Amino acid sequence: MTMRPDPTFHASPKLAMEAPPEQFAYTLLLSPDFKKPDALAVIDVKPGSKTYGKIVHTVTMPNKGDEFHHFGWNACSSALSPLTGHAFIERRYLIIPGLRSSRIYIIDTKPSPLEARIHKIIEPEEVFKKTGYSRPHTIHCGPDGIYVSTLGGGGKDGTQGPPGIFIMDCETFDVLGRWEIDRGPQTLHYDFWWNLPRDYMVTSEWALPPQFENGIVPEDLLSNKYGHRLHFWDLRARRNVQTIDLGANHQMALEVRPAHDPIREYGFVGVVVDTTNLEASIWTWWREGGKFHAEKTATIPPEPAPKEKLPPLLQGFGAVPPLVTDIDLSMDDRFLYVSCWGIGEMRQYDVRDPRKPKLAGSVHIGGIARRTPHPSGKAFAGGPQMVEISRDGKRVYWTNSLYSTWDDQFYPDGMPGAEVMANVGTNGGLELAKDYFVDFPEAIARIRSASRAATVRRIRSAIHRYGIERRRYDDHLAVARDHRKRPLSRDQPGHGLAARGLRGPDGQIPARRLRRAAAAVDRPPCGDAARAAAVCAADRAGGMAAPDPDGGSHHHHRLRPYASYHSPSSARAGADTANQTGALVVRGGDCAWRRADAAADLSRPLRDIISA
Image (tube, rainbow, N blue to C red; front, side, top):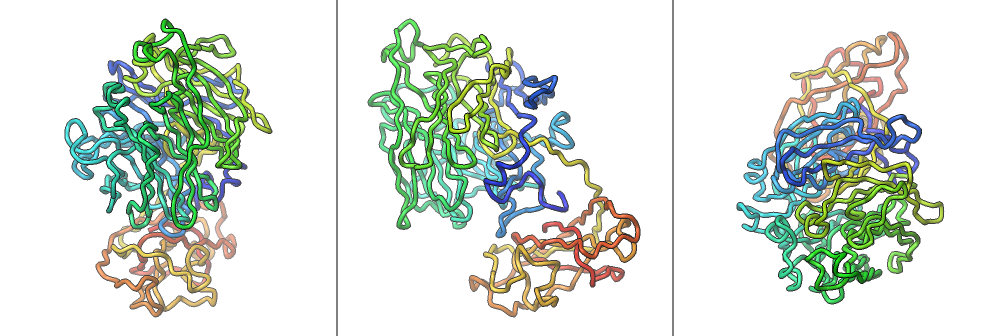
């Protein structure tokens, strides 16, 4: 935990695009025959570096057969949410689920990606017991915890009950339980994302474990038994409010990508295949008049191919379906990138008019029938699959593996892992970088870097913070937290996110309790800013003078000790720190302060903050 918001958290997409460029990319390595453990590779992506495009560190897992697929961060910019955020947590831990094993690895990337190591392992039994779900897939760092989507329900084959989403604590990594309260007609799951200010989530569908773990089931596909619906949820109520069926022939509605700008209430989903004509499609969904709508806005046709170039699975069709298996949206919501894994093409669409995408660029590499080599002359087996865009939108990275058994079906000649990168033109267009080709001869690769949270997507900025000195006051501070969560009351300016210390704009401690407040500590005693911190405390207030925003009662508090932290001060003894004022960050739970430090100088502004 830091004393100030993590500098890799950004309050807007524009600020994220202005952040320093990525220096490392995290890529998952899969042992396709499960004879070796899966691993996490750290790749140097700093131009001009002696190790550019090389693996500079590897974290090998202790177990076999996990089948790594997607992964994400413990925290990201959503932690800045004024309602339930954890603004002083760090983007530090990678959460890597084993899709086949249901085991989850927590990887600590501090103090440097070059020293990444296993921090914790969550065994599948804990996931089963606390959630009833299995086959964890997508990871998103939410404002109030880590959200994990699953593809399986209970039982050995994952078919005892529908799959869904569960929550993990973003600090302890405890599995907290299921997210859904009312799932409505949702019975399949795949990806999910949200619009936090608009308070909704969208989820998609793939299949149940028997339909993907041993490969695609042709009979189920041709019978339209894979997923083809979008589900829209009230995020706070955790309730399915609307389901849109794209049509049974539109099989496997996978990746969902809402606009990054929350003002724009639209997004995109990729559909793998239309069983009537083998084409793939992009759909745009939007909200209007209180309802969600969706329409097909782009199609990609199959490519005819001679039988001898096709795997047995496709020989009867005489063509290669595009197989859109991943999509990604640039941070400025301008370009949508579409991975056509079957035909070996990465497409770039201009989506500034989201309901009229225009093809702006394309590159071919690999492909079932084309087998286009990399510009360096190296062979590229497979096709563009998991895609990640740099924050500034100038580079697009991708790897070539989908899922081990599906790789074998569609690319039976083998698929050595590979990762490539394309440069993006100022006005659109793509060009593969000739000097960037990362090969993994003994493993299949799936890229993920560190900017966003879920699917192979994260190019982490190279600014890494180092250790923070920690000092514990076990008996000085306790936090009373309300079990019931309520929205922040905004009736008094100066309270909430912008409130200073524990005082209102008039300098007085408010009579009402601050709702969903964080705890502020570490005011330096007078005359010595470099010595031990004093805990600022105030007795817990009584009943609220102002009405509760939702009229709910206030019961069932619990007290727990909470450690206070402070960072080593750069100020010398006697330095004037009067202007070092911190902002009170608001999130779940009421705050109460016990056992005030009598030596604390309560007339001076707060310096450092922790969240409760």
